[in-house]
Image (cartoon, rainbow, N blue to C red; front, side, top):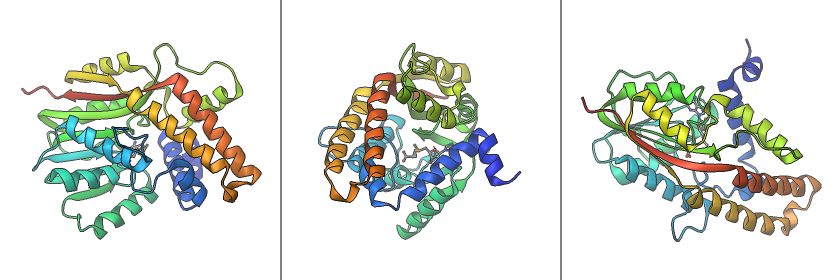
Length: 294
Ligand SMILES: C[S@@+](CC[C@H](N)C(=O)[O-])C[C@H]1O[C@@H](n2cnc3c(N)ncnc32)[C@H](O)[C@@H]1O
């Protein structure tokens, strides 16, 4: 089976080609301006007080996750779905773990992240591997912390990852994740062309098996064997301020002479509509859970 066939048939292949396409778009001014990412982070951001840019909100997200996961000096950390490595680099610099091992299925992101890690002389701390989070190539009890920042929603399936995370954690170790979720009682959008487009796009990169609300998320963690499970709704600190940022940014871009073409203007308008729709139909959670001590 060649790459194109794989991309069409396998859920992981579809996710990987989605991120490969985004990677190709990253080099254009339009895309960078539209999404506002300049650093190596790629999530909605945690809009702590004082954050005025997407990059600042992403740094704040990395910090929030480090705090909730309890990443400290000497820890062995697994970052499942590391993107371009921004969060792993943040933790290596600010928390001094002994080792951060990152996994990603997207080759172009892995190449960019590895280069940056080398430039920063962090190779001894950060090791980045091209591998899937649903089949962890590690022995039982290898890590103190497992983190999946806005990535486990893509895994095929998230439940398989939860079981694997439990296996590779040492007793008492923690799993911390963040993910978008459907609002309670809302599995698919109702009607409307934007709703259908959003559902279609969602299904391409998020398996139905993962598309459940916050209450079910907590149950699934317990079913996998975790204790002290907390799944907090942080929509007001993530999706709500992110949508406000997108609205402001799009209003500016619509006035920008560089983006006057029909293609750019329609792209901006669709982005605005999808952002509004997602805000109405989705929430965002941060989960923390612990592997039993004995
Ligand atoms: C929204 S990005 C988040 C990236 C990063 N955690 C951050 O916050 O900057 C999701 C990431 O998950 C990765 N991913 C998706 N499915 C994966 C899988 N099965 N195993 C490992 N990584 C995966 C994607 O390639 C992408 O890098």
